Length: 264
Image 1 (tube, rainbow, N blue to C red):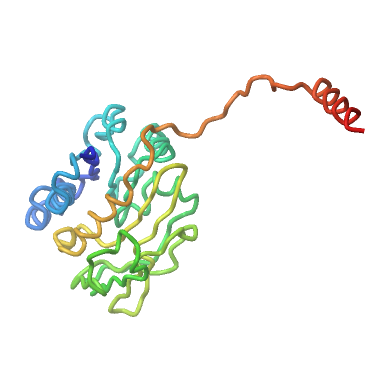
Image 2 (cartoon, rainbow, N blue to C red; image 1 turned 180 degrees about the vertical axis):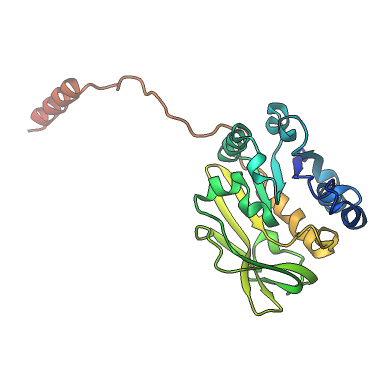
């Protein structure tokens, strides 16, 4: 039996504890947004995964060396506290991705330090929060992440994200969203970074219960299976100090010349 995929669900955990949001969040996400995402993965993937949560307000933002070393796929949701994330932690996460760990960047995580660093662009976009209806269109029906989801996924109320989305051209475009205001958005995109896989998926604002939506849970479960490492050891690329060559220039040239003369 294959070992379960070790998933760490990371949450900013700010709205759950802020005075202005606490009551609404308790109704929509009584176990926090990270708790809802983790529960959906356990529900759909069962013994295929080991899921734990980590939050910004924990020591080292919950992403200690031991946690990162035992994470195969990391999901990341953040919104208003991106700047507070320690750059040293971001570097560690980046190195893990380059070494093979999967990363799922969710909704406002487009502005997270780790996503911007991996993309190398501003990752800016257009937005409007007016309870728009979002249709999430499957534009890559053969992709593993899009399996078992309807065409389209219908989200009755959601924050609008629209183009232009300043990201590098995706390796794969899996989903495209349209909104009741006429906007379009590249809502599901993948990239390879080093040995790791990155999936950005936009549905999931804190003001709407999107992470309880059965089709959104299916997309995230599929994405975890897709993003799991393809390597058995996590070794990020590094500069290599090569030993002296086996043949030195003069010796090699002399041997080559002797071989040429012998052939004449």
